[in-house]
Amino acid sequence: MGQAAFKTLLKQAGLHTYVKDLPPDNLAKEFDFSSMTALNMALEDSYGIRGGRGMALRVGRASFSLGLRNFGAMAGMSDPAFRALPRDEAGFIGLKALANIYNTFSDQHCTVEQSPEHFRFIVEKSATAWGRKSEKPVCHPLAGIIQECIRWASNGHEYLIHETACAACGDPRCIFEINKTPIG
Image (tube, rainbow, N blue to C red; front, side, top):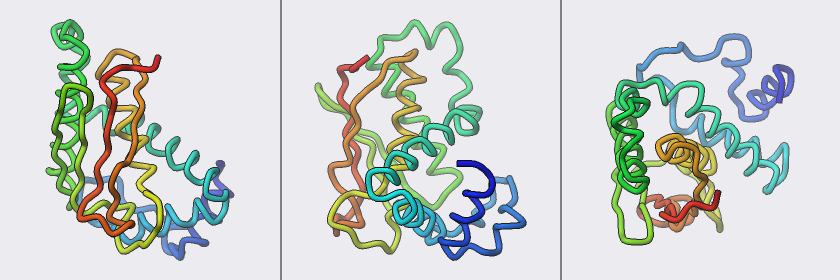
């Protein structure tokens, strides 16, 4: 996207205060959910629905790669003992670690469930759907984070992820289903 386009996106989202000074890089809960929603909507306004979705997924994957995987909850996943676990078990542990990070460092409450065919990542109070109304699910940045988390936990396998419920669509929570069979 580049610096100039990012600054334009911040202005379009009404986040003028962050054009010169981004929020502090700390774990304090100082970045409002409405700001995340505004950024998500600005991506869609700038790039269209499909382009904004693609950019948001990329932002989510990069967020995990550049930051979240370094959290303590994820640190043990590079250990050889973790890498030796069966793929489904490693994926489930990775998703639970991601949920724990959100539960500890944000106001989102996340849980993880599994069935024989799917993992389910369930989010109460999604930062990207906060206060938003839509006919289709909108939590694309979070889908990108989940996608990268499961790819990393499974040692590079890609999985289909589908947001089956979204608070922006009137659902009580956002639910992501992740097929347990990798696509690549």
